[in-house]
Image (cartoon, rainbow, N blue to C red; front, side, top):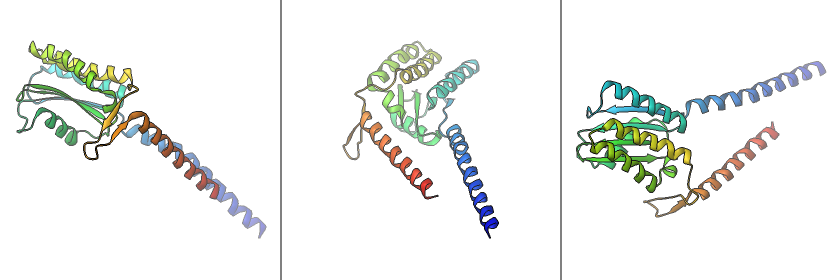
Length: 207
């Protein structure tokens, strides 16, 4: 009877070791596939040459990999009756796969340029930074150089990411009226992670 019990214990330990070894692998795999950053150019208005689209595609992909955001450079001649901001938001909903990103739009119908951020990117793309990016982009657009305008927007987004999040940054929830400071958001996330870690520790102790 003793030998059988010892064999069962050995099997249980081996299974536990295998499961514990699999957890980091699963987490690493999820990190590689979840919101890893993408770049895309959609020149629906035909403002760019083939070579310019190729160069901007590389720039958008580089910015996406640097920031881990979806970076989309989009032009349109037909906003479907929507304003430029609404069109950018609708594009993000329809064509992005990650939770964080930026749509850089040249809307020829409304004659407007837009930098629309969502997810984590909102905290980096402050109103002042977006204004600076658009000022540089309008210089190119006013000359009819839409390649330069897109280049300014993509590089401006990437620079905003590397500049980090301002200490006083916050978001405003239009539905609830709540103002959420980024520092408070970080604190809540840290406590959530601590509770999750404690749960895993308790489960491991039970095992």
